[in-house]
Length: 223
Ligand code: CA
Image (cartoon, rainbow, N blue to C red):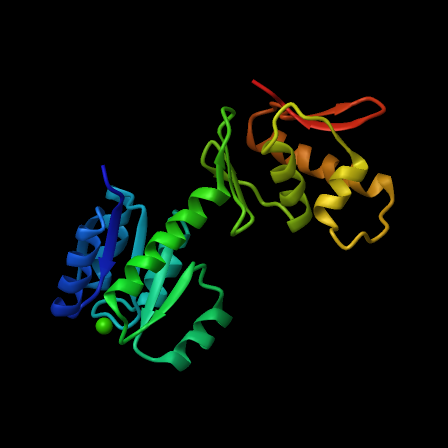
């Protein structure tokens, strides 16, 4: 059972080469040559990763990337023919995970695909309570519903949820979010946690996933 890789590339020869290399690496590639067809296909098949060419007929890669990001967190590697384009793309914060410049060696593409898949597997977490976390994007969802968290709230939630049941003291939480040891008052953590709990509670119909332990600190529920 290999991972499904969507190759969006309008040059059939190039798409064919990528498909062959990904097949050889034990993955399941699928090729699409028109930007207009991508969003529906992604919705229906939920691939594990997408290689997305920038210049496409129908709809360009930037638009496709933005649209896919409105409903999916799948890893995206953008492919562009111009190296100077990459800086511009990075500045746009499209939410792509990596960039590859043409001409590329297919071997390198396979290596990058594997690296991005590994990174995304390591940074993603789904808890039994339906909470999903993506540390590469500071993205948290509960039962599919996106939580609108600040960076600090996200880091607190991630630290707690990755070790369910463990009680963290305020000091320990502070060192997780302020590794440079800046001095922060205890009540600062408390106020972040308070806001975080409120957002969680609203999004999950009142269930309280973070618990305060009197005189000690906080923990994420263990089930
Ligand atoms: Ca193209």
